[in-house]
Picture (cartoon, rainbow, N blue to C red):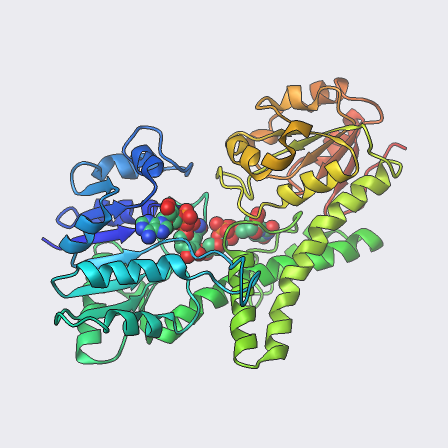
Length: 455
Ligand code: NAD
Ligand code: UDX
């Protein structure tokens, strides 16, 4: 029986391994983490992450061929294939602080694998890593003297949060990078076989290691670039009465451009886009490619501009003062269908509103606990309210920051009636029916569209 280990039971490790276990009932899959609380949650009915469809996939395999444990060492000793899916955040110290990837967790894993292994293993980079990290990993793993051989593969993960299970079930592609040597090819085949249990062969792409590593950073950079591009146009739309939704539709019908990822918003969030672009920027800088670095840095700058622009517009439209005004933020997660708030635009927006001495109340169906952690230093100045009606009661403005489905079906007449007049609604996701809201009496401001005002 093939034994798979995954180090890191996070947003990637947990769902990915659950899917592999479900699709390969004859493979034993163990997911380990140093975080006891997380592992306990994976073993409970209350999983540590909110992801539609995840419960079913975990329940189908857990206890049969899927196990969650904190015993990292035992897992390493037993495994034939080790996925490393630990966090690779942006460095906050030393060289490259604020830009480079912090690889300390990854390297610790590599050293532990080396220390404990008594049989040959395939080590798979599942985390997103700078191009050529595998070379460093190989040097560490090859420094052992006990005759154990390691094959390093790159197998980046492309799932998006909120749709992780659908993405894993039916991926656009699986990417596996390895060396073109006989050993490398054998390792690649072993990993291809794991995915071939459910992914059609033509969707399993094999490349050299460096192309695979770089493709992950590039994919995220291109996706984020599309969001920043349409968001830049949204600013121009607001100045000219063009409608960004209409522009996106018109350009998206060009098959060379395509319709996806052209939704103007309050800005992109999530743990990946900003981190991975900055990582790319740092890599380019370190290879002396300053113009290339600057080109990609602009994608992040545009995103920050879009977040700040949202608050400036609120301030300007609400008579240049929001001091003492209650403002209800509808949604705190960085996108719908996740409780994740990492790099959510809502964090900066909440803080900027506090800077203006507004009274901030936050509601979200899944993300309130994370919101409290993100805003721990200002928690005394913020209200957290699970019920959107209560959150909006007595508010001067509602700002919708996450496109939760339930926000479409709220009774906005009731919300309007409970608000201070004139009532303002800022839709940071172009998610609601603006004409209907305007008819109720709201002054409606959306992204990249003309405002619908009463005053
Ligand atoms: P995460 O922070 O949710 O999970 C990482 C886990 O690794 C944590 O639970 C942490 O305790 C554990 N860990 C760290 N060091 C460890 C060690 N030495 N031994 C055992 N466990 C250890 O991170 P994530 O969102 O799952 O992301 C993991 C990687 O996948 C990152 O490189 C990220 O860029 C990449 N990625 C993330 C997504 C996403 O949507 N979140 C998508 C694709 C790729
Ligand atoms: C992203 C990549 O899509 C995924 O392939 C990778 O593995 C991890 O990073 P994720 O961050 O989970 O996934 O979500 P994604 O759907 O890409 O959205 C990222 C951010 O962009 C969200 O804040 C979302 O609201 C925003 N976005 C996305 C827009 O503002 N407009 C769009 O058209 C699309």
